[in-house]
Image (cartoon, rainbow, N blue to C red; front, side, top):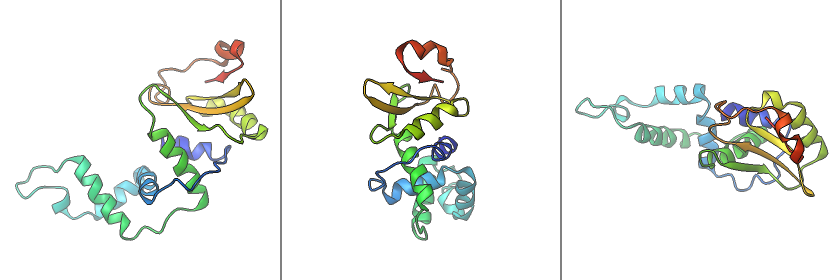
Length: 162
């Protein structure tokens, strides 16, 4: 989802960034495998392996990584905040559900650019529904490529879906 969120920021501007918490920003930042690896390497061994030698659960290790990042995190750039907002929306989706990344103030240019780049955006759908324009990303099955259907299947309904 990290890559998809970053790719969508090339074509889409999110207006409401004020709902993005520091934790949301850190989750986005750590979703980059390079950043996660770098910060996990900085964790003391005692935060990864218990005193008896058993492995500490991944959820606990991740929380320790977040705690470590929080101490020196300076925030994200505006472009990264755009991607982090998209990432947050996508992460909040249930399996096989549709999430609306932007459904207010969608410009014709955004619709055109998303539609033009559908083949590079797995799981994206754009187009008019009534008088409202929507941009959606369908989670899980679509992003993993299980649900890839050609645009012709949805031209009858006025939707463009990949």
